Image (cartoon, rainbow, N blue to C red; front, side, top):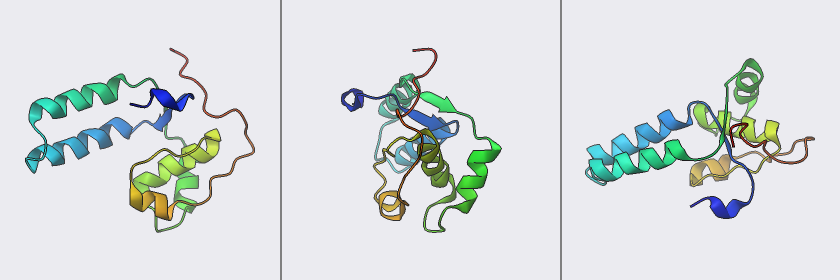
Length: 115
């Protein structure tokens, strides 16, 4: 699904836990079967991306971001800023509340060292 982007992906370390939570909610609401949920989780886990640790710098930047962005989403915004990457999201609320992403760093996200 994301192969067309043409650049490496990166996400904070808690991303898969958030995917798991969202899938579990859909399964509980009978909007997604357990089998399809397991398949979606496997696809998310297999996604080639850099997993960034949540360090003090990232936490401090996330804390400084506007209140209109959910606290955990601030980590994605802070990481995108730090990496000089565009923020890729399907979350309309996050897109509306997202601050302008600017960074002096060029070249986009670093590729996963294992790729």
